[in-house]
Image (tube, rainbow, N blue to C red):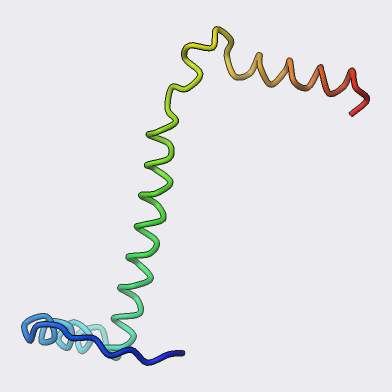
Amino acid sequence: MTRTVIAIPEEERAWLRQYSRRHRQSVAETVRQAIRSYRENAAREARLDHLRQTAGIWKDRGIDGLAYVTELRDEWEARGG
């Protein structure tokens, strides 16, 4: 594990110490948990953003997704796949 020095306002530091004390863990563990949570939320938001960007891309194709997949599978079967 790598040590990292950060500068935070005293008010934030005081809150961090109180929170850590209340949860009976070190300030370092609280920061690690916060970073982990931030990363998970960022990943979740990225996935949602991808879904939002791709929503409805089949609407103008004239064929529904299931029919398209069935067509592809039939083609693969015909090729011996």
